[in-house]
Length: 246
Picture 1: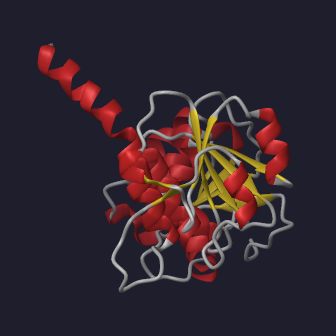
Picture 2 (picture 1 turned 30 degrees about the vertical axis):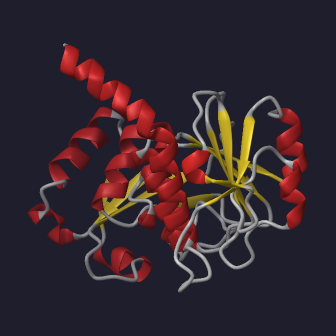
């Protein structure tokens, strides 16, 4: 195996947990699983063996491959899979315009999954979601999400213009605490360095997240986490009420 490059037709997970998530959610795309000889001590290994047996996936023990592909010493499993393409579905969307940071991307995927947002739109140019660094940072959350790239925001907007659109901007017209909705919506964020330009003021209701004047802006993944918490809290409150009434 060779170190990943963007034009490759395959990619791979780095770590036991992301490999388990790959095997659970995308077994049809898995080519093989490579493990380190010391994985026998890892409590996740029996589940990898069970899933590989269930889906007839070959497990190969090869320490040199693990050492070559993993930048860290605590990687005991690699899941090699064919790249795939998804289509987003109806529901609430997160839209990332030109995201470029691999660590941020993986963290945001994991945050989305944690708050029940399963549809991710990425506007090019953007980071490669199949880079193993993204997959590792997502802790396998990528395999639970529907992710679709668009060449420009307008193409996406025309397809889903019946959504409520909330672009998050420093020039946002409304404080996030003033926003409440139960309608299908799209939450739009710019990239890590430049955010969204003023043209996005023309799309839906622009929103800002208040913070102290001692910083100029929030980290993108932090801003997304705060936003998803705010927009999903009514949904989680309803679940709590239903659980208490059972």
